[in-house]
Image 1 (cartoon, rainbow, N blue to C red):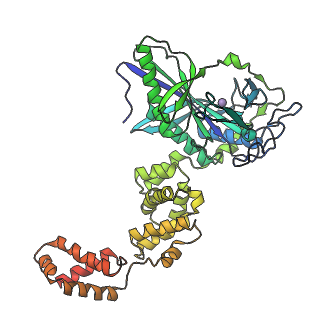
Image 2 (image 1 turned 180 degrees about the vertical axis):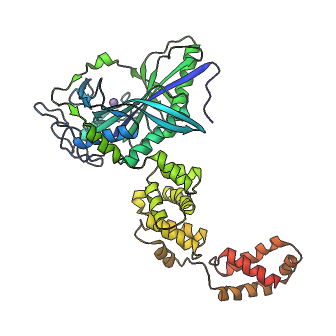
Image 3 (image 1 turned 45 degrees about the vertical axis):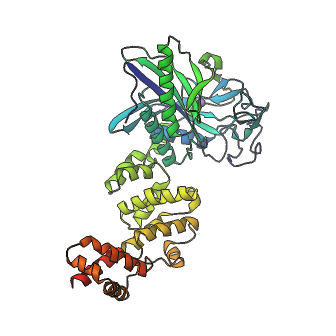
Length: 488
Ligand code: MN
């Protein structure tokens, strides 16, 4: 269901998404990009803004920016520059951020989305390149600057390449905002230019939210909600903010441009600061950096080399027989590599889809590991599906084996785990037949009932056989053999 606005009101949202690139080095220095480094150990003189240092732009970062631009249907500007955006923050040692101003590298794109059965297009105004700031940690109080005892600054992040993707105010409900971020995240991951984790800040989303009366012709004043760190929160923050603005306007208050903070626990937004306007930043071209020239040949080459994008992958996986929910889970994650690899081993796509999107996802969350940490590959999944298909493992055993593969961090194959744990369906019919004959002989009353037409009573006998085989018999086979013995 799409969140409904109160009668007579319309919600308008534009999104600004920042993506931290996973290049080897920073945007303007040779300092390594290392998210796990000890604080302030990945800081070159340029990142610290020391006088006399000169930036050199990272070609890989520009390439990643252009690739993402093309993937979101943008045009690539032939000649553009970097600008200085001047403002002072303790985590910005130069006193300005190198960004782009009037002419971004990529412009006028769009994303096509399906939201609750509706086909929508959200237009993208621009994608520009910039650098990240350092990271402040406020100690004491609630972890925010206000009320903190002191602030610690880590400049490892300063200068990491950052892309900013700005949508047009083309989003009219929280669900579309969520779908937009999810799609963008999928595209970024497919390109491999960032791990795009909202929770860890490698992808960050700011929402510009305004409301207007349905008969109004001008957009209302927008307020910006900063750094909401999950897709669920993006929806909630926008819905909350819209209602808050409507309440304020209806109470006779005026909405001012401001930056607001989303409180994850209280689920409310509150004023952080009055918003700066463009004039406050005193943008000017960075004289230390040369123009960036994108030749049509280079752009064509990048375009031709784009990988399969989520929209195309989604259609392909759906067409292979995987359900819609499973397809969505697979496409919007690293699972797609595992899925494709498993299907390439010859395993049935829809079975692989279920195993990956349901069982594997469940097991990873239960053991609290990422797919990467688990070491699970498409080879493992393909083998597991085959062990179920040839009757070696029951579905229940397959789940247990999968858990074992995750526990072994992918160092053991499904058949090794099955051997280790003695998991194997009994497929030796003569051994099973002996057990069945014994169960039938010991339960004449139940057998009579079944012969009299009480089909369901067979369940009790199946249970006894399963018990006698310690759960290792194939239930389908037990059922068949029991029926044959009773009818015979
Ligand atoms: Mn920015």
